[in-house]
Image 1 (tube, rainbow, N blue to C red):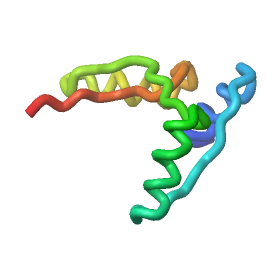
Image 2: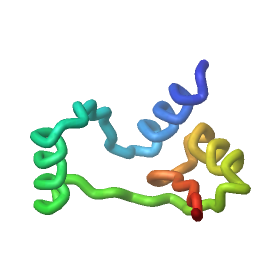
Image 3: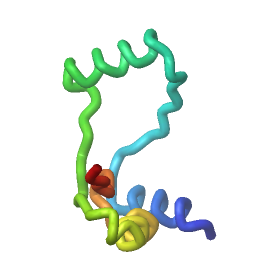
Length: 77
């Protein structure tokens, strides 16, 4: 079973609600997304932030199904 399916199954088993959303990168769709965020209909949950040097650990967390939100890899210029 692919790691992404394992993660989806683990989240579902834990009682998490999630869905996929596909957007076109255009002004209309982006404005709608901004509206949802402003209205509190969409929120971002960050599980953890890793430095770029730990990107593999971040990916492992994502595919393990244990992440409770987005796994962020920070790139500092």
